[in-house]
Amino acid sequence: MKVVCDTNVLISGILFGGNARNVLDLISKGIITNFVSSAILQETKEVLARPKFGLKPEEVSMILELFKDTFEMVVPKTIVQCIDNDPDDDRILEAAGQAQADYIITGDNHLLALFRWNNIEIISPREFMDRFQAQ
Image 1: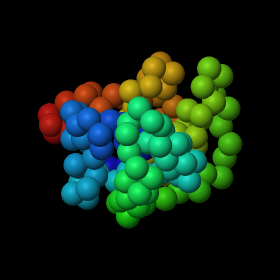
Image 2 (image 1 turned 180 degrees about the vertical axis):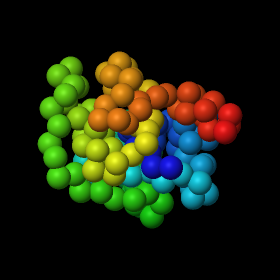
Image 3 (image 1 turned 30 degrees about the horizontal axis):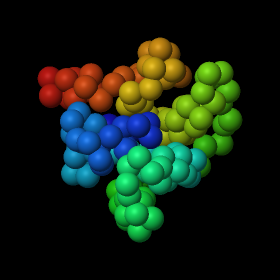
Image 4 (image 1 turned 90 degrees about the vertical axis):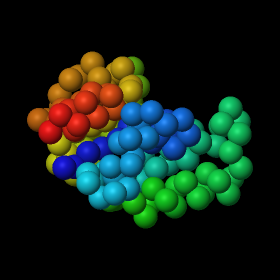
């Protein structure tokens, strides 16, 4: 199964746990495959470096290296302009489209409001885990 996790899922999974961590655990075990682009990793780096998280630069680098080693990289060939309120969310759509993902996993309301984009279902970490456990 191919997924694209939004930045908020990556950060929540690493720093806070819960369903986002459960998703990352499935990825780390190779049960599902998460795809990222350089734009997603850059946004993740910028958010992790915010003072409110209290991470040292070397800790941010270690997290990003872990992600690079665990996730599959894609280079989106199509530019998406779909989410006017938060154009950064378009980077998630671009990566998912390039990866031909089955799901976008996000806590972002702009993305969740779409429900589906190009035959890719957009769901929260909780909904993803509920469906996964039901299989």
